[in-house]
Image (tube, rainbow, N blue to C red; front, top):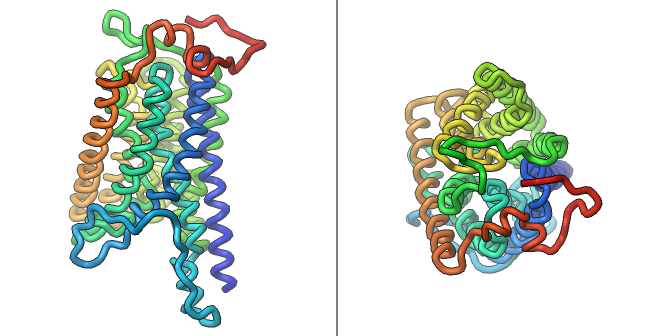
Length: 418
């Protein structure tokens, strides 16, 4: 009973840390975008958290953990609406305690809340990529469908015991490089393609810098996200096991550090300037990269994975610009590209390295790409052809805060913006 309590308390602490990450995402997004769209971004982030939790309670949790049985295809299942805690048959026995906890390490309720915090992250990734030009209404509709249905169905394929978990060599994703970050990243690519770039982003085919209005706030956001990742990865151990939890936090930190350093170094060598935003995204890239295998890597492996992720960030941002895709916060490079890298790294580094594992990782990546690209395209394309997804030119130039919210984030301090 004492072990159960310790495990459960650790999981609740991790739940709080993952919840705190949403503040980090909000700070990062508003810091890297313009002042006139601050309220819009904050509104979207608050909507994602609140509606995401409600949807995960009503349908998402039981879509993600449907209880696949032997012989099922492991693609879709549904355990019913709402939450229903397992019944205690005999409270005087250890078996009853295990029944109550749904898992030997923590309670059913803690499991729901921890997983629910993850669910909203996928839509938050999309929020940053489409910032400053997407209508709030269509974004809210997208969030409801994607977080409420697509994310948990896709998650069930691995974490819910679906077909990727039952492969001869099971697909491996410890804390969500693919299941969380790439799920958001694929949707971000689709949304950005269908929306088009912001006015002024490309001139004569060449990308133009549109500076964010508060880089100190963006930096604070990254520090908060790094802190929250202790819960994101540390909680994915699903217990307070001292050895595995400690190792996971060490590999998480080392990957973040090497990702930031290498991104800053490569960016400086290529562009001859010390770019703080590249440094920040390098840290996040390292974190996303290690998330798939934080429990399987040695410290040296973690440093290598983070370093490669940091280099990837610089080249991915450049490639995205060359493709004339406008991603104001670098979400695609960080969450999709580094998410893919981190997932593949499972077959190259650490305890699971090998050809069979690498093939399984490729199967997992392809499976998630398929469901995410198809579903997000259908959702966004249908809205584009019906209600429209992009604000008018005037609204974009004057700011979404004024036109969609009738508010100003800084009423006593306005910057001149174009």
